[in-house]
Amino acid sequence: EIVLTQSPDFQSVTPKEKVTITCRASRSIGSSLHWYQQKADQSPKLLIKYASQSISGVPSRFSGSGSGTDFTLTINSLEAEDAATYYCHQTGSIAITFGQGTRLEIK
Amino acid sequence: EVQLVETGGGLVQPGGSLRLSCAASDFTVSNNYMIWVRQAPGKGLEWVSVIYSDGTTYYADSVKGRFTISRDNSKNTLSLQMNNLRAEDTAVYYCAGSLSGYYSLDYWGQGARVTVSS
Image (cartoon, rainbow over all chains, first blue to last red; front, side, top):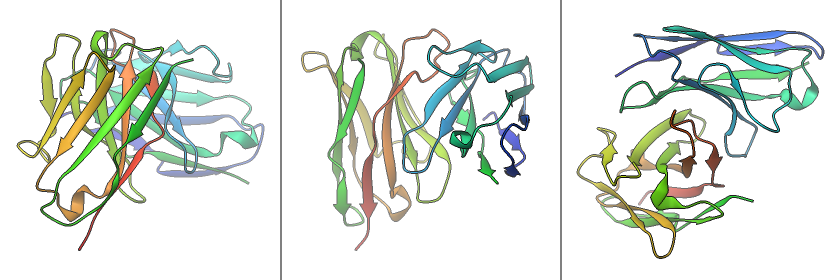
């Protein structure tokens, strides 16, 4: 099983800050890495697919990068509505896995 | 607008059974990769089972032999039959679907809550 390790687990940030969340895979997955946002009591929502491909309707302040084992989700100029838990997800193997999540709190 | 709507959640005793359904609109279940993902209270996301467009199915080790994923093409519905339920199966169960060859989960249902308790 491919293990995805996100860092940090929790971050408290102020609006307009730039936030970087990393996701490290236990072995290479190419670009088969996707990012989701889950707000309290809601279903997850796809933010970025295939490491860096943007999704229609997702604000442009969200971007992704990386390949192989190291990936990054960047949120530029954070807004209050970005308070949520963020998950990475790999589909590089049949046994897909998710990262443990990164909770963002807005000060 | 694509919608996935799960039904069938509830309270069940350990050892019991439950069947979840996921009805899709504006999205053809049989043509796409579909998955069940669960989230235990206060925890992260965990995949449960997938079905590919060609009908191939896979299960997480934690549910293998107890859960069965299937689809009804005529009703455009995905199902999850859950047998021999355990307390650790307590979770919100989401169905999700992918339009992409990368298997990113483009669409999610609202979730069905399953509680296994005596």
